[in-house]
Image (cartoon, rainbow, N blue to C red; front, side):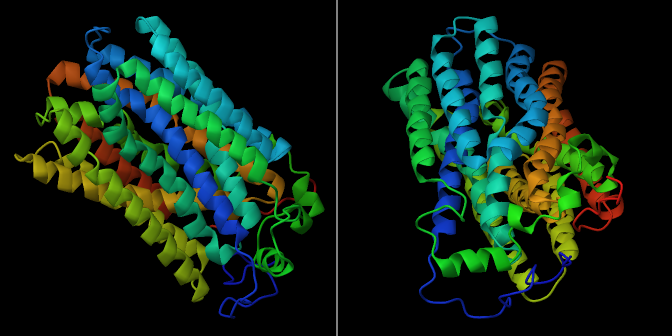
Length: 446
């Protein structure tokens, strides 16, 4: 079995060789389509955080109630991750992504008909169920379509959809609120997801079955270490799902991603309210300046993925490249703790931009790990689901913690200090507890 640290991943095309000029590039069209899907996915989940400050006439909610509503999404989204990863491996990306998009779009639209705390709570809960397969599906797509030397940049593309969705939520939702109503926001963006689901179903196939993939591209994908079923070791493929919990690597991935999302979910939930209440932003400022940290994060993620792949092509081990990106990104993200301490709004935005950008670089490395460590292609989605399950426990607890601390202290100083400390703990986890990043070894008796 070829070591993951090899710049080629498997025998065949050398990392530095020139690709045939006639080679198709369908893999990039596929990953950009996944990017659009994740952008819509995060636009849907982020829209409530932007719209909620302007829904006060219809919903008189305390900060604690708002935190519970945000958390309702993550209760469903998180606990469905365990089944979602297995489901993605079972049915494949085409079916899993299509059905997920149809489900989440319907319940995004249903949010427009909420009339109180409990109906809004229910709509968010069911939205979380529908969105749960999306990240594991995207990780599976990268593992199936991309060689090792392109894996980090491809991951950065689909993962940046989460940042783009959150970024465009600010101007789009504020514009739609001003032009229509908060109800119109959820109807319109829900319809976008329905259209995307149809396109994904029509376009997506695995590379071996895709009519627009040429022989050169297929060979390039397979020889570069893509995780297709044709490359599976028979014994590894039989490893039961529950056995994954026995690996220290998997446990470290789960805990580390929890630490990352403890910081990232501030930007998806309370960030707009922070700018409005703590920094005095009005509708126009929120839509314009509030997008800056997210834009910086998208660009940083792409750059981080590109540089990681470049380092692998130059012969650096996947282990060193991934740990540098993840631990360094989490350490940089810890500066979020200083955002509430500075006196000027532009200083806070600058610190939040640095924090979000750093966290995005870490996320690119983290979402590359399922393909890096999976014992077979049949475990990529499952491992992605496991680490995403743990990460989204932060989605359950972080909004509630922030809401309670804001109500108790009257500011965001204490919650941001806690979030920054957890980010540092996550960096230490990947550096000292993770162990070596390589394909998991399956015991002969498994």
